[in-house]
Image (cartoon, rainbow, N blue to C red; front, side):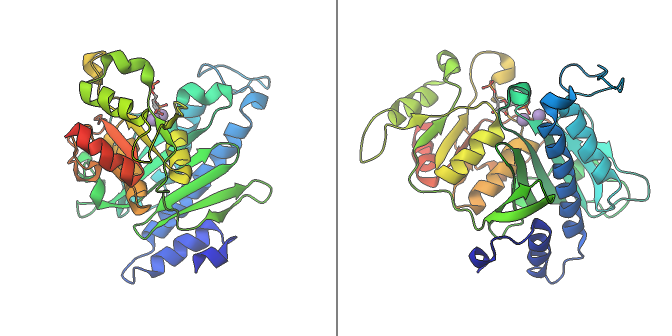
Length: 335
Ligand code: AHG
Ligand code: MN
Ligand code: MN
């Protein structure tokens, strides 16, 4: 039915999602709507990047003598500012902040949010797609300011998750657990309109995405799996390699076109013993999106991402995510 409603706004869809949950208080609706506003503000700033001289070091001044910020700092502040006073969040975590982020006194709400304000930071100043990733849980504690424990919940408990990709256009993709929808921002009117109803990740998977430069540091299982993808066998392969280096952008392409993305652990350094990507605000939200779209997300030792109990805010996790058939195949190599 939604297919016929192409053109509805994201705010309307968020409201309609709420109707599926008769006991909903409307707080999640409010939270997501505030996140949409943050996405529009960040999108506008990303689009001004080259023009407004906002790139470069924090603390630099622009032509008007104003202090300018790096885009990732700007994105972080924008989301924090919207969320701390929206009244729907009790505590936050961001890739850019070591500790939990409190909300304004008296504005504590029902939910927690963890986010990567700007993913793909190495691509910011070269006009390659970047994005914001978010993960929302219902709080565990009763009331007042939320704590770290409220944030340390497994991915299967997320009530909403998604991302906003700032690319050739700005697209918001999110799920509240009843399918995945994508909305494209029309900058001329400042609205996100439904462009991708009920996204399902294609079964035919043409792409794999991994940083092959690390192959000498890979475990044998990773090497064997990637070698398999290069073969032509059983009507599958050889797959084409696509690696942007922005998780959001690699993920979004694979979600729409079919594909598998891997950031496995490697032996390059002790820090890479769990890969690079973070569980709370990179792997878990994208895992919820991919599962809702019919795909899968596991670790390189075969654990379902959504089942992992987090132990700290910034913990890393090896990630294999994408089309079901390919993740099923990967699982055979990784378990
Ligand atoms: P961030 O920009 O938020 O720090 O994330 C960067 C991540 C992710 O977007 C990408 O998939 C990965 O780093 C690329 O890492 P490599 O350069 O090691 O391949
Ligand atoms: Mn990131
Ligand atoms: Mn980031």
